[in-house]
Amino acid sequence: MEQNEFNEDEFINKYKSFLTNGKTERECCSLIVKTAEKYGFRNINDVKELKAGDKVYVEKWNKAVALFRIGSDDIQTGMNILGAHIDSPRLDVKQNPLYEKDFVVYMNTHYYGGIKKYQWVTLPLAIHGVVCKKDGTIVHVCVGEDPADPVFCISDILPHLAQKQMKETAADFITGESLDVITGSRIPPQSDDGENEKTDENKKPEADLAKKNILTLLKDKYNIEEKDFGSAELEIVPAGTPRDLGFDRSMILAYGQDDRSCAYASFAAMIDSNDNDIVPQRTQVCVCVDKEEIGSVGATGMASHFFENAVAEVVARLGAYSDLTVRRALNNSYMLSSDVNAAYDPQNGDLYDRENASFMGGGIVFNKYTGSRGKSGASDASPEFIAMLRNTLDNAKVRYQMAELGKVDQGGGGTIAYLAAKYGMFVLDAGVSVLSMHAPWEITAKADMIEAYKAYKAFLTMHNS
Ligand code: MN
Ligand code: MN
Image (cartoon, rainbow, N blue to C red; front, side, top):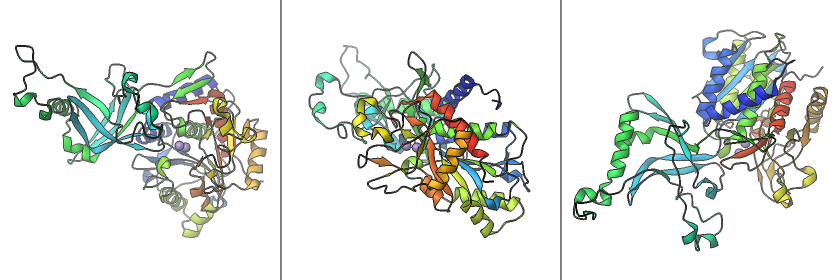
């Protein structure tokens, strides 16, 4: 992907491959680290000193990662930061998940992030994640993606018996607790006369023969015991790969595009900024964090000290560490909070203020503010910063649109912008617009992916002079 010969098809294919292989925050983090190393980024733990032009990454628990390319300016004058999140809505497997009920074996789940629960039934599902064993080994699990793999599924009631269900509200007719995934089944063995042997203890439902069979399979294949689920992190996601959408192939239908569309475009822009060997003036950063969908909490979310600590580690290796240097570096930074926006949905146009909505294919979306009910929870970007960005993007001939998420008081949402803004840096939400956001299969326009990439790349070299 040289700057002069940017190949759009190749970029889209790489994006689809990122979505295929990165269906959890861990998988995305691994992909980012692996690719970054290929492009000369070193783990900061292996680096003693840093100078202009050097490239390092800081990683936390394989769930959050920050890439730095050191600029020629003093880091105290600030960095240009692209920040995205790599977690997506999904179903998490509980710690005591397996149970058998009337000959069917289920895995109990607790949903993660904002989902419409009814969208998750009757879909092929895959299980991704890790099982950490007491002896320290980590078993990596990925079942349901290879065409030869089995998949998993949540059943729904047939229409013939759904009279009562169809009268309930969409919020209620599939409950969170009922989102349990079918993982096995058995038909009870028959006796010689062809009838079920009711007296045989082994043939009673409570004998849990099907569940025991599943546990044997898990032991054989992964060497895990039932109790090992207690120290596992298994995520259930839609099975399958991204597809081109439409006769004209103008769109992509895929799981996890909130926010991997922006995470990938940011990461690709960061990597490709190496195309020329010119050292950037301002230090360039791409940070991809976890837990945005549940409030940016935890040690790997943006509300943690992960990013601040990463900057401190960088400053220390530049040989000028002080608390004040770190604070100044953060305070004087520019950041694009690379997160998605709801694309205007022509079938539900009344939910949007059309003049202030983002359209699929209309370019990267600037959200001056997010939030809800009177901008509550928004960081509200400074117009001075937006003007700088307009200038940068116009000069780079990048298409962008100004929008907010929906009509006033219709709902709302948040991003990581306000968490970066607390350091005093300039932050603006800027990302790809998504149709059916948070659905198992989300829609984006390829054109927007390309504009986002170009915008992020132009932003990385933006400076005041
Ligand atoms: Mn998001
Ligand atoms: Mn989201």
